[in-house]
Length: 156
Ligand code: FES
Image 1 (cartoon, rainbow, N blue to C red):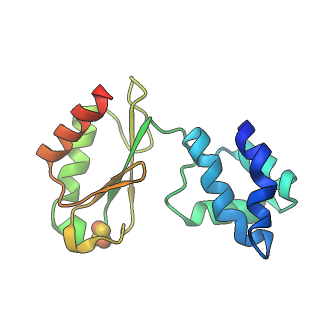
Image 2 (cartoon, protein in one colour):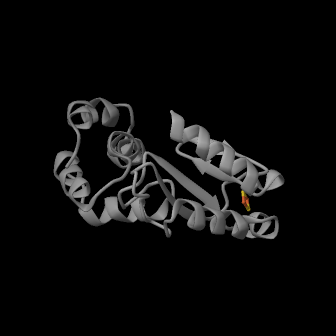
């Protein structure tokens, strides 16, 4: 279900763009900010609000990996699985997450704090392996750094 903030603000977001199609990414971003993910119900509601076909919104949503279509933890970890990151240890990071947080891809840890997905290139190949936690990049990642980071996030 769409949050109150987006229901209140969607018109002002659409008005910033020449075509409403151009506002779609911004609208989806705002929806995700409120709930951490975008459900099929959210798409239906948005479709009615902005008079755009459900299929059009869904196709944009599924194209961009930055949008979550399933419930995530408070801290959602995206692990790049593309070539540079794979060659410099992405698999070790994925295994570390699975073993230490006891989750598989798209699952949420029992405490509700963490989830993870693997994604294509995050655009920082020169400092691979790279992970992104919510909106923050962490480059040259390894298991030790990730353990420290997770411990820190648990205390916040
Ligand atoms: S390959 Fe991982 S950031 Fe580009």
